[in-house]
Length: 264
Length: 247
Image (cartoon, rainbow over all chains, first blue to last red; front, side, top):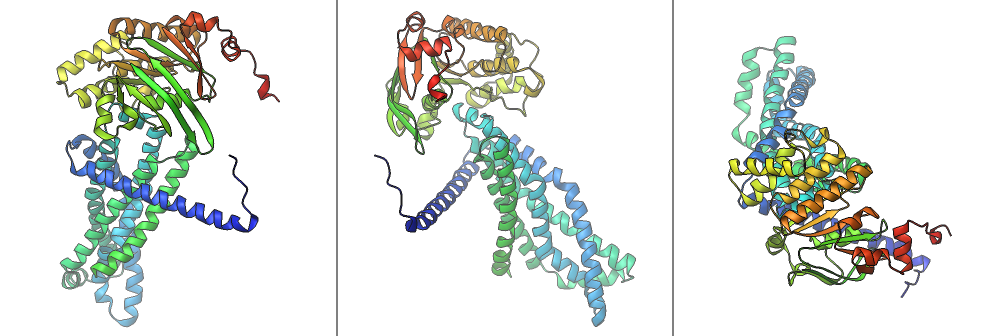
């Protein structure tokens, strides 16, 4: 029986209802996807080769961009914080200010954003192309779980590589601050590193660590999900890649706030 | 035997399959023909468990696969080989690794046995010595042959071919058809072939089923289909233009 057209006054409600159902549906699929991925992570067989490949793909190949952005972020911080502190005669605190900014906030967030831009987008595109060329269907009909081969190794690699990338970002950032503060602006080396040791404690380092772990999970989860649920053709892959990067970046900043509130 | 009973499937408001019923006898080559967009690939995806119907069921040797999920469905799929329309070769792997993949992951055979079987599979499809090449480095016809080798290397009982000759020249079309026929004679698997290739496909078919508007319009041996008085079948086989679309 053909459906009767809605009265014009009811159409906005129909649109809002449809939109809400679509949102809940995609949230449900997003959650189910993570539960399936988690099941694949914790149950054998463990795909060691795929895991190592993913560490190379997400971590090692992002190393150059992390070194570059880390160094320049530290240099910018060194310069700006020095110019502020010198007004109050407190430039001795440049070391801890740079280190705390990097270790607690900027290191985990910027490293995660950089890895998302480089590896997250590539992850979505790769899985998306596998979807549209039926390679994921081929795995399924071979009675092999694609979650085990494609998603679980990526999430595990995210767990391992994001804290490592963050640690590298922090170290080169502190070195960048040192270059500007000590070598360029004349602060003493002992003051820069000595005050850092006084003010930075394990709690600060653990805050950055837990943030980077959570970002690693969020980014790989979003990027693999978007690749798995790609639309049609090249346009679908392009759209999924953009959505993956935007959603990951937004979730990194949202998670950063909540993690920062909980872990302070 | 594969038995399809009153299979119905819609995507949104578009009904693709309408109470479709079909039987595929064990050990035979059944070819499904029909116009593009007629639901052939959707039917095939139901047979291999990639889609679930709105109504109706699919039975494989009496087991209702449309009611199965997870490991129970995987147990049935272990008996399958599937050749996808585009080949669906893993582009990050060489041809050798593509063929070795199901042996390594599904059957977990020792490396020496895998190497032996892969070389034999490549030889069967006429691609000896091409194992080191990647899918992007070989022609479309070669990719189809590698896909066939990968589907057959685990010696499946049932093999599905989704338009295995699309986009190939007439010589390659015949080569692939004769390859399917030759492999079928050797391994005696049950084959379901979705194809557009008229009349070449009649040479290899035991049974031909014509799919039209979500139903089987006619089914029978190739000779009976070619002599069919059914207007839809005649029009498709002779490639006559469909005037209803112009209006």
